[in-house]
Length: 578
Image (cartoon, rainbow, N blue to C red; front, side, top):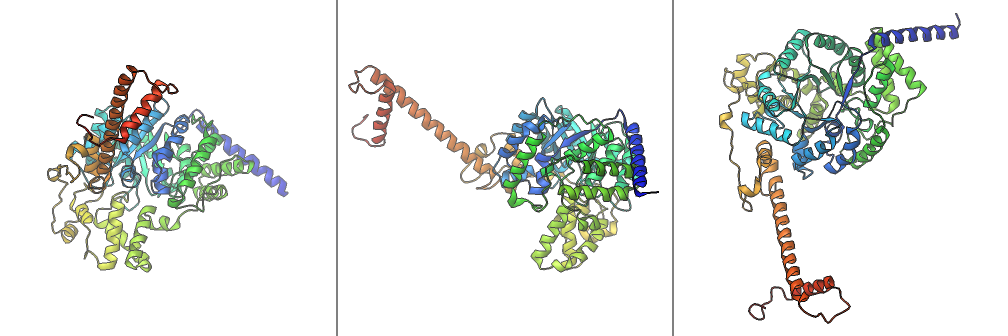
């Protein structure tokens, strides 16, 4: 058989396989969420996108047909106040005004931890959720680092009370205890809390194609609400698991636009939309504004270059070519044939050709989030221990097992990482950080695996599990020398900003003091304008009753000249009542 004949057979067989895939998928649909304006720039550019930059693209993105847009939560509240001098609630209101009637808006919160890094009392959780909904938010994605449903209950109830939708997200991780049976039970428990939708939150992108192939059908079988797929591209699985998820009937996938996709961010909506088309899936996207959005986001990325972790790997503008069509079909056929490793290699070839960052093998091998690894490297460098990275990576499983095999997501990823470094530097359990002690005590909630009482005693001094006690929460709202409490906290939103981020929002030069100073300056300016207005009115009355001899001046010009003359002697007392 000649090579041409072999090629012909290959094309025929590939087309036959593609036809079968399309036949099986026919009539199904998929939706996407856009995360460019929250998790996208948080993952790639340290959350430094400003409200002004967001305003340039939010309208166009809202009209593309996404199921929802994630626009708030995570690190945005902290960064808005700490680095950008923006009111996070005002930013949320600006965005929801633009998205209303076009796309649902979504925020991410950490359940009992809200947007901070520790548990909070029920009234703080409730008020924060209601304040966000009052600003126009539609959906709150609520997750817990330990997958403890108790930590979600108050937030779920509060969002429901405020008329919002609940997206209950389960933190995906790997380890010996995390079987399909474990996952289906956790996801079903979350659905029973009253969730309107359920998300697989794979914050480190650790779900392999094989894991996705097994997990998604199991979830679709036990859940009655829509299932969303959230994964990062760091270890190299984001795009391939997105295609697998679509093939297996996932309801919605988290994505970013090409300039904000890939690397430690999410799969590209352009690429997944293209794959959906090759499989015959209807995704309902309107791509009219895609080129305009791409152009604007590239300009914004240039403006954020000081924070760009992947400057050498900015994805190209998406274009459909004959070669890309062939490559995509090959990926689909490889999945259909059950060779997921081949499909992954083919997808990596597509990602390389489109300019995406290569898979991070360190993250893949260490099975930790990219941000956690980066923080550990910084800590080791500060200690002069950069050569001990392998020792720290070996210590992480010990630290993680001792605290109940917690998923590694904010804040547990940082807690476990720092403790692993301390164990290597000072000796195991010789220098335990406060948050790790609290985690082992049980203050953060119930861990996936019960902690050995002997281990708990060694680390905390007590064998008993102790949950967070909200009675010790400090409700006092401090004043400064310059401002009273009424000046600093004019409404509940400002109080909530302080409760979650006291070190950033509080203090003489903190966010709240800067805002109070701004309001004071505005009030003085308004008083000054009112005073000048009164002078103008008085001058108008005086001059209107006189025969102005400077006939070249209009009445308004005469009043303006009079004001200038008055200002020359302002503050100078010549005669009483002058």
